[in-house]
Length: 405
Picture 1 (tube, rainbow, N blue to C red):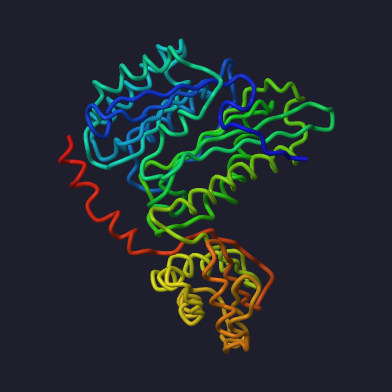
Picture 2 (tube, rainbow, N blue to C red):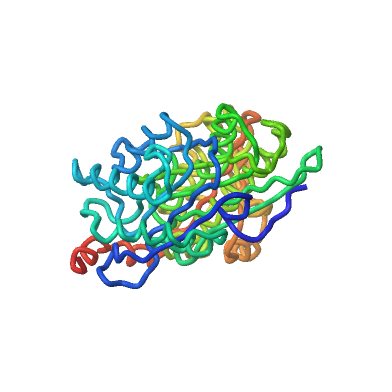
């Protein structure tokens, strides 16, 4: 049985973390903006990075380092993405990596470097390096501070941890922190997620388990249809639980899936000024690919998202998005509902009273149920509405930040 426990990345055995204020976004600002996470012992690890062809310097560096050796530590900053910053950006990413490695007595490639924030601005590296040294002197087995330190436009820190007992009676824990609120569209989203576990795994299996968990969580969310330059998921497994390596794979996978899915949903719920968490459930598709493109067409449609914000159960906008998605469909077979209440049956208006449908979309969380009735494949996308406040929030972030530098 998988049970939720307190904490995040420090919930499993043998992990410590610390945070610091470096004034990255605004000089002199007293805000946590640098996080350091480390395992007491060597780990096996895996990472999944953005598929955007424009990749931030830390993504480029970390993706090379993890191919050389297993990660044992993560240094991450918020407020500056260190993306589109040229050779100096790579120098700064390497400087962060080396500073963390030196402070923690590790090899440089054992440190994964992550950044999140504004694209195209130079890193205030002269303020960051002392922050890394400071954080390294205050490592402890609590993680509330690092969950806050990686936030950008998030309104709340995001963490989750679980534990279970395997068939041999050994307790295994999986914990994580994450950030993400806008520019959310896989693969993956403008997001960072750092996962730790004391499960003993082989390198091959932890890579397999990580990709499986990412595919059913962070690759199933969308807020605004944009993909970031910095998206990163890192998993570190240090084996201190003492289980036989790779034993109880099914239960471990379930735990890892749960942690990532909970955090993925928290990201969508905390989308920049969104008001709804919507599950777009597509069934009866001719292929899994068809199910996914229909879900994404509906979940990313600006017209559909606006209707959700206006609490309007407008299934007409949904069926038009289904029609242009490019999947195999038959109009007279399409059923659409809201949290189980039929809105459209066989491509025509259902007899459910409009007031009942409207009462569903007034809720903060509801589902859009789509059955194409042409096959047996399915896909679920977790998405959100589009609010006027979202537009206001994103109008001039870059310009405002430039004024503060």
